[in-house]
Length: 319
Ligand code: TXA
Ligand code: MG
Image 1 (cartoon, rainbow, N blue to C red):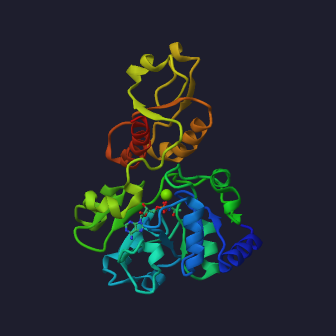
Image 2: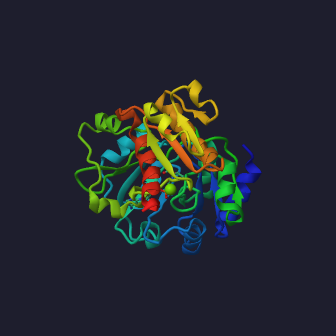
Image 3: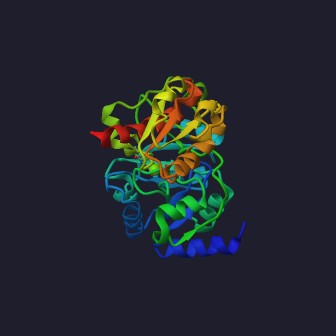
């Protein structure tokens, strides 16, 4: 790891600038979580509405108390087991947490990312960093440096290199600020795994919660090219269109002219590849991205969630 770059990033953050931050889930757009101007810059760079709250990233569970109050006992157990890692916890916020981070809500989202560069930066910086995914609002989250560059260009002062994000989908968000505990966003840390660990069932968000967690709004995580889910047996119906296919099934002989991206069979590999494949598909100059619907099984919940949101944008824009 290049420690000079980390120092440079710290300096930029102290002056209220923005840094592209590699994490194991997706790349973030980091800014000093105590600096109102820097946070406003994040919202402007992303084109993100002001009421969409940000996650505070920290480097140690010891720092939870700087951001959250009335922290339930279960948090230290969850932190010991899953942090650093792809889990974001929603807790009641301390008064000192800027309202611009929380969208005016009484809760704050906190996570310790599992990436050596992110952890080193957080340690050197010494305080919390907000880091929403480093994409334009509603678009696909970046999973490498190049994608951050193409999403944000000159709006980001420095992008720290950290290779491909090893997970590839955003963290699982678990709301612990009230009972029943709720999985606000599905991720590759599975709901069933958390339920086993906690020894209780977790809820999925109702409509009231969807307003609080904008990552849950339909039409998120979406390419600009229309995207449709399909069953492989229906492929012939689409073949007269200018399309690109993302499929786990092998390319049939009758579709050899079609641009085909073969997707992995295993769910972890699929998550790792998904956003990069969608980016490739989106820049291929096609009129339609066809995605073969993956297996319906609990391990695939986060993948289905992102694909359905991407497809919804298409349905909506056709209206
Ligand atoms: O994996 C991740 O979580 C990545 C990496 C960079 O850490 N970050 C990320 O941030 O996905 P962002 O801002 O793109 O998504 C954060 C999600 C949003 O859906 C937001 O609404 C939700 O977290 N969120 C943040 N604070 C919240 C709160 N207090 N209550 C409910 N939802 C909250
Ligand atoms: Mg995002």
